[in-house]
Figure 1 (cartoon, rainbow, N blue to C red):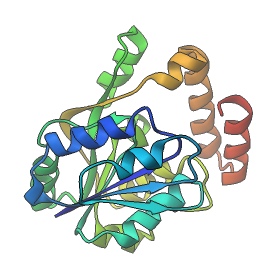
Figure 2 (cartoon, one colour; figure 1 turned 90 degrees about the vertical axis):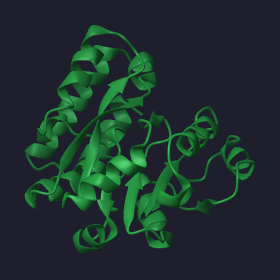
Figure 3 (tube, rainbow, N blue to C red; figure 1 turned 60 degrees about the vertical axis):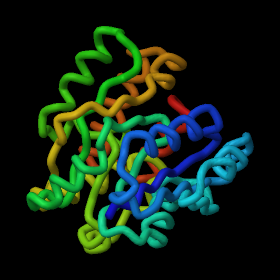
Length: 229
């Protein structure tokens, strides 16, 4: 069974819609629980989650996606973990698609991803996610992984305030344990729209290159805080 773990911080705009989407597009027999881990939201996120249907757990955590997702994983009862951002909406029957891959021996992976924006660059970036290339991976594509493999790796590296998804994905690629499910997850382009597509893409590439050349978690976060946050 699958435990869905959603880290949130001030996601009142999206979390209610996402939870309804997950319930409508999966089979209850496949889902152990949905765990929402709040990182000290100051908006109405917590109240919205509390108003949702039962079987949704709400946990409180210090801010930081790695810390939030690790806490959710510790509480999870399912043998498959599915980490999902609050503004990313997986395809219909996502649960069965994930289970099918695990039964085939693929212990970790993601969906190909498209943005909810038709700008030509974002459409191209979306198309590239169907390849199994390390450079095309990111947390917005969601992440499924068996609990056993997650624990063997040691979970998310909590020294990373950002880029924690990529650090885990690096470990999965080292183990040749990563598959891209050829169905679309749809994610919000809100950060691109707010910051500017080319400006934000440049900063994302810079962070990727900095990490490639050995930048520390603190250095990456300092750059993110200065130019993106």
